[in-house]
Amino acid sequence: MKSMMNNRISLLLAAAVAAVIATIALGLGQGESDSAPASSARLLHTEPSDHAPVVVFEQYGERCMNFNEMEGEGRQTCFQLDDPDRMVFEYTRMMTSALFVQPDPSSVLIIGLGGATLPIALHKLLPGALIDSVELDPAVVRVAQQYFGYETGPRQRVFVEDGREFVERAHREGRQYDMIMLDAFDVDYIPAHLLTVEFLQLVREVLASGGLVVANSFAQSRMYERESATYAVVFGDFFNLRAGLDGNRVIIASKGDLPDAAVLERNAVMLAERLEPFGIDAEAAVSRFSIMKGGPDGADVLRDKP
Image (cartoon, rainbow, N blue to C red; front, side, top):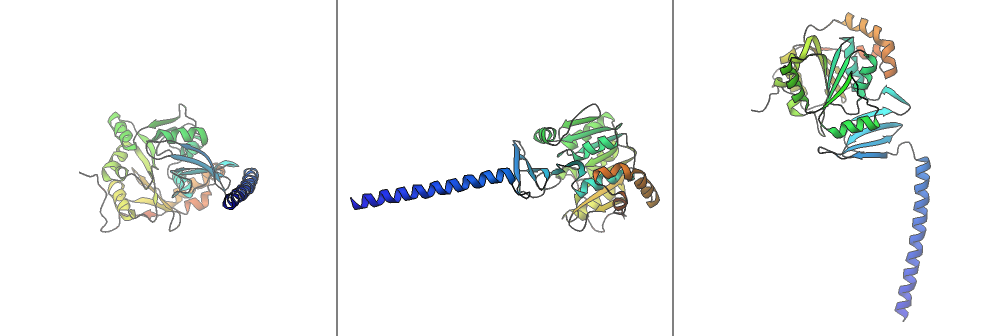
């Protein structure tokens, strides 16, 4: 009888403690929903995918896209909630500065959509140009449209397929672009079949005379020297832009001669006012341009697997 009473008292005490804890937790939860710290990531949506779940979240006043989880390696896309046009990532500003080399392309192909930062910006900067984007994962396209303001139309088109297959078909059909931007990443890195000599030779064929290829990569990639050698084999000298020692690097190569510094600076001055709303300081951006002459000595080029 004594042991039964003790058990009952213990159960009542445990229930009371649990109720207090639940009440405190509920109060804390309500407080967070009303005034969450700016640093707290808030999950908005997870889009199922055959490749990797596409996660949309908000943090630090930005809306971002990532693969698999909010805290995963590297955010795919972000924009400022209070200033959506202003580019968050340095690499998108560097890629857009390819307009210093060719200020008025009439057609642009972008391989890799993400949250559509580049196609949205280029459509505003070049309203008369055709902007074609290619994205392998339809889940990414859905997220870009629903959460990142991406709208398609006659001059803003999207194709859901592998980027290399799109380039191969464009080559067979004789279609060409004034600028081709390579910004395709999977969970780990650039897909291998978009890095090889054979692929870049196709890209060169699909470029119009004097056209540009603009490629996003990493300054500290273990593939850095081999990527450089591969671009040099296909295009010769190229512009090599870097965002510090550990950030992104952007390759800008031409199917023609590279302009000199005076041309770059003149175009930067001409475009400065139009680029400012996107967070691009034209004077600072043009200072990043340096020419890589040939590839690194002894570096093996990247080729398709037999």
